Image (cartoon, rainbow over all chains, first blue to last red; front, side):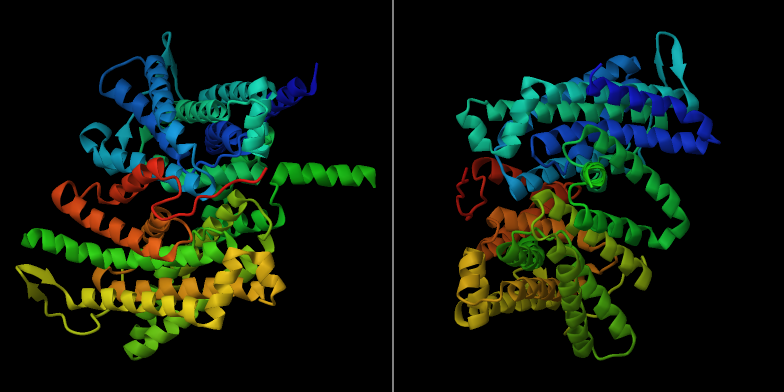
Length: 311
Length: 290
């Protein structure tokens, strides 16, 4: 058994060990939200950490997945599984179409373009209220498959935990595959990668599509779990949150992404006691970690551990 | 015709504010290659500080001066405590730092002031001016006039004064500028103060028209960023043209097409332009060293 599976098993063990420590459904709810965010962030990390491309619009894909599921099941009576797959396929197609021209851009221009795509998606969801319910949101039915209906926090905890493990397994596989190595080459130097024969455009588009599909599937499941979806979930701030989770946990570290997602999902819950000061603390944490640990939490801790062992 | 003229008036007015915000982005980008996502918060702080100082009984011109100074101090603090310590970090890291700063400043504004909308009285009269059947508010003339003055002053500063030339030199080549004795750290600080000043001025002159609140900087900041990118990052004239294009397109689009999609128009233009011109309208074509 190599390190890859050991880490995956450790994550599975943590997920399995948590329930006795959670006294009520409120804690389950926080854990489930953290899990949904982690699924998106593991995908986004493939794009940001390994391919070195930023996206300030990933919440848009999350929102599209969520609304595809919500609209197809609640308005047209589709089975939830089929709706989720259709949503994911639709998002993949949209991501593919925008990726080609957008990923040619670099640095701040790419940030601007992805930000634009995300904002346009959220404005459309806000405005076309005949379809989406507008700013008030859309009610979404329970997720049922093969006669089983998923209901309640304790059931969803295991569903989200399972999907997260699947996402992490997929991500680590992609990273270790030839495509993953090509991606890292793109991150190091795009021109250099091209010179040694990597089809950089194809690699970047592929990982963009994969990360968008991760977001879409998480969005679909979230819509069914929450029973309700609002355009805010597709908005700029959710995108910023997701990017912050990636960087906080540590770019180019799949498990770091999970750690970042868990911390930033749980944090606001504890900050609600500070109410008025929530934004100050949140902004302060974003600045503080980036200034003092620019490599992110997990890689910084790893480095400290290694230094401590060598000393 | 009068309808179109009406849209042009409001488009040029907001466009002028976007242009000032875009210039703010460009100045900081030139001196440090940082995109300052807290630019919109400078606009908000300028407006909110003026409102509260004016409410305390200070005469409007004094309130305006103090508010501009306060915003410049915030800009300097942002550079000193958030951007300077992360000098050598990645683009993404610095983007998150400035986004964090914008959330932080919004939080502070919410605690210091409140979550309500605030207005200022118009600087001169409230009497609308009739031009070919379209209505122009005198405050719009203030917005356009003050913006024009800022642009001319900046042009003079960057081309005719030793300080401005030092800042330009730093943006062309940091190391070379350092070698001829320019204090590049001071240039960095000055660029944040200057951008904060531009933001504050824009926020103050527009408050009598659009009102202000603790979160009014978000969209203004993003539109300013669009203006700067549209014109080509770091190109001052480009940012001004970009701001006017975004402002006018928004007003005309909201009038003839759909007002619900007003905020989307800026981003649609940006995407279309970037697909065909990856460096904006007037941007430099960069080459990458391997």
